[in-house]
Image (tube, rainbow, N blue to C red; front, side, top):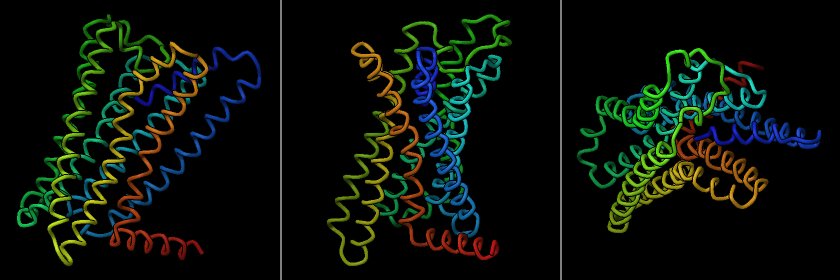
Length: 314
């Protein structure tokens, strides 16, 4: 979860013994703010482009692309809000923290699951072209989005169900520093959360690998325009796999950080900050590169929108 970096900031701030340490934390927070604002602006421009043509919001791969943009934007906003609250050590009531946690947890899983669905869409388009129109219709796309959100909500529901059964009614109005750790009381809860994450990791990895292998076989056997289209789809699946890998490694970060903490505390801080930038923020900038720039039709519409906006401004 992206909350790992928030505890880094809080812990570092509590351990700060000089102004230089505080300045180091400020630099980190400012750098994160710049990245978040940049990614949000890019995502907003791409979402606006998505609604410029009916073809985009009636085609499965573009609809799923828009879902990833919205999911990433919500996650960036929530993670940045928690960062600021934790950095200044603000306390909020538990019920509000539960809402923030629910949104953050849900959309942490929505992006990798949507990427998996986009990979399956490319598999159908290349390996089952005659059934693509039937399987990837707008109706089925909406069903797919509903299924994605349903599966994404399972880890959150499990963790919160245990939490609700463990606390008293008065706890919901208490002021706390919001983080995922306040919902975990026992070590077995951590193991259960880790097991769920690894199960999702395994299923998505198997799906990506099998799709990649089958598309590669079709690409090798194809000829002419079909071969060019197949290899382009293969490269797209490869980029999805890399982006998905970054998202899935995020699920392993708590285990890695716990091991590093036993070795060196300062190294633990560095690793946590690196994990947040690399496995939480970085994957959120790859979606615009995969479809916003590589897709000719979408890039043309994006360029047209940007040029028109600049012209009106002038």
